[in-house]
Image 1 (cartoon, one colour):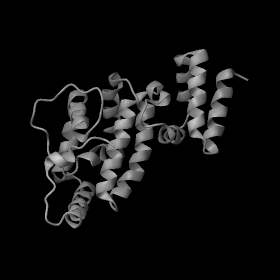
Image 2 (image 1 turned 90 degrees about the vertical axis):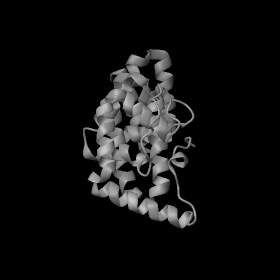
Image 3 (image 1 turned 180 degrees about the vertical axis):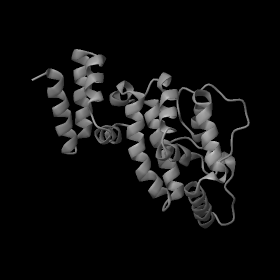
Length: 216
């Protein structure tokens, strides 16, 4: 049996039994002995659902090899699966979901070479579900009017917006269009978010600066 195929089957079995963290360690060990190109071939054979398990199991404090070597298309398909879950959750827990989605997107982008960001943003915007997922962190915020800064690490929603404008200005315009009331789902989440914040802080209005908080 081909050595790469053996590793693919081993990784898949680990993921299947709920041991995705060990699966990534196996990929790292294989990369050390066979090189990144060999691991990239293995990763290309994993399904989006399997990639999602690897991503969700990795230590958010460090890059993940799987996403560093995956193609932008594979990353997009993985995020699209995430988007289906988080958009539904946002209709029930809008404020908390925004924070979690920002963290998810930030982790993925921070795990990749920034040269991949334009392709990832554009791939996300190629589907309605992907675009909704990308838009979620920006609900209730305003465009930053300051000069866009060069971003290489995503640590806040402001960083994400600047990275989007820098790397995919056309996608940034699509996100702005959705936020301007052109999406029923976004409008519903925005209304629910406002209601949730009013219940949490009845005597205080949440302003723009308070949404531009660091990832945690």
